[in-house]
Image (tube, rainbow, N blue to C red; front, top):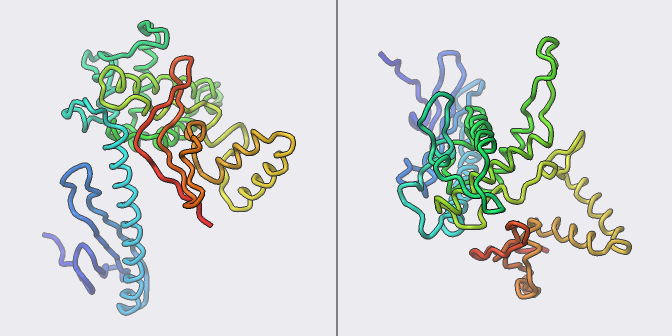
Length: 326
């Protein structure tokens, strides 16, 4: 029989419970159960603290509740914004509705000794030359998607195919970089996998999403989240990082770029603009003068340049507005 809870404030889902140890458990819940993928769903958080009395516990709980409510509002807004992008920019007009909830893991499923495979392997796209991929390439695709479908990458493989974006792609590649290969099993020597191996993962993931665009037609063309990725361009290179984590680092790079303007104006101005606007290379390359509004200090992002065989092609989607603050 369940023990009676010693609730000193609120209720069992949002309140304070005094534990037998003398500590206090804070619990908060916001939102409602998901009725559809557009809904954020429940937001549950809890925290255990040690304080001297109920009054102090209540004071800390109310602060904790406010912090969690703000976090919930921010996360819900980000989620809803992403779902709007999925609806307007990612899902193909002719998409089969029965496939909208299919996850990456379901689509790419394969297991040695099993005939049953995910939909991907009966819908392999053609390569850039218009030919079928070789059997070795398809087998490598099976091998590498099995790695990605392991539990440690659940943050990615349990996502719906239609909601995976560039940020999710970058996060996956960053995590794959942490994988190690055996140098000497007897001596227990391992090393991180090479950039070459990372590039193979990227190339095979491009095949997966090319299938979704050109064969299965679940996603719109030009939405392949791995299209702009290269093995040496994501977060870390060699022993150093390429991301800017502090204002000091940002300012230092900005000053260096300003100093380059005289000798290398095109490169310097391009990277300065990228830092200020936070736009991707393909988005900047697709800008026209008509996209700039100097009076409102805004940019309309309505196209991106992506690689398409040996050409660069404009892919036009919905308009995203970027504002430059004072």
